[in-house]
Image (cartoon, rainbow, N blue to C red; front, side, top):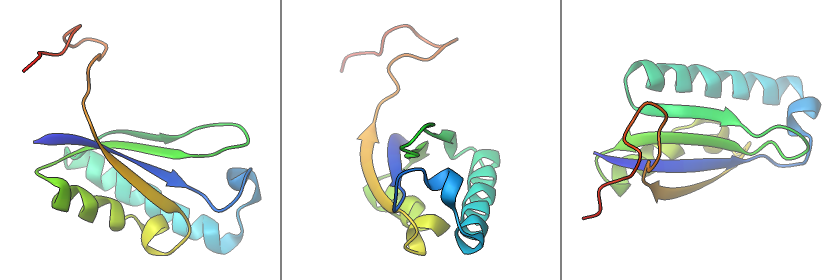
Length: 105
């Protein structure tokens, strides 16, 4: 299992404060999906940056890049065109309560 991160770039600054009812409904579906993925053990953590730029960050696990892409592209905000997604492979190197340094292979 590999770790991945995807970023959700909303269409404008101050997005959280200026969402329309339609956008709010899509972001509610986005949150519900993340809750489901968290319960399934796929999502490690997720949340938005605060302030003027509300970039969303989702760290999750997937078998490979194809599976990771499917997770990101299945996000209602990305699939519906309400946010632009950007995905990268990721490695958790420091985790509170976990090992202090990653193993070097």
